[in-house]
Image 1 (cartoon, one colour):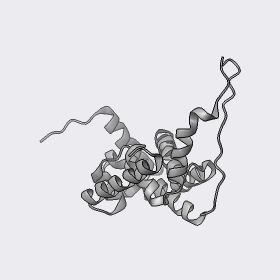
Image 2 (image 1 turned 135 degrees about the vertical axis):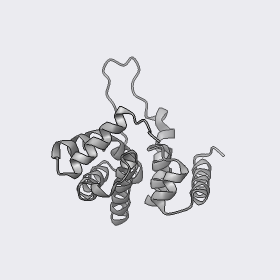
Image 3 (image 1 turned 180 degrees about the vertical axis):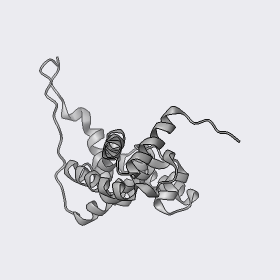
Image 4 (image 1 turned 90 degrees about the horizontal axis):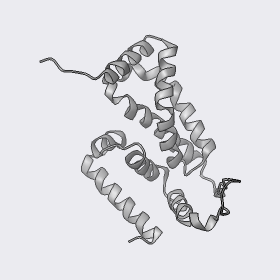
Length: 184
């Protein structure tokens, strides 16, 4: 049976083959394609710590370079890379269990007709605080599901759980978040 592959899949497979063979330009293209996704997920896992996020993603790339040859399916490259970054973020977060002051970034828009009101962002601050109170493993589950878009099968693979166990754990976490945020 002949299967049709998209040009994106062929391109990804070609980049992977070149990178596995030591082509640094091909690997740089992989980095360019996936760095932002990895950073977004790690930001949640680290509880919003930008420095720790960047450290986690930077730590993930050498691992990916060394182990790229183990990825058999080019379609699994994105989840595989994100999983490496999440593991690094969880480890770094566990090592740095210290209290942090929540920084509120204030965007100064001189052309705005109304001044920036921190009170309009209370829900965002509450969510960040609720997420920060969770363990790095719990934040990882939420980030992988809602930032990276992993389904329960992909989550199960990363977390070494069954898909049904993953769904149950996620439901408990969401219930806890809703309760803490007063939404349920």
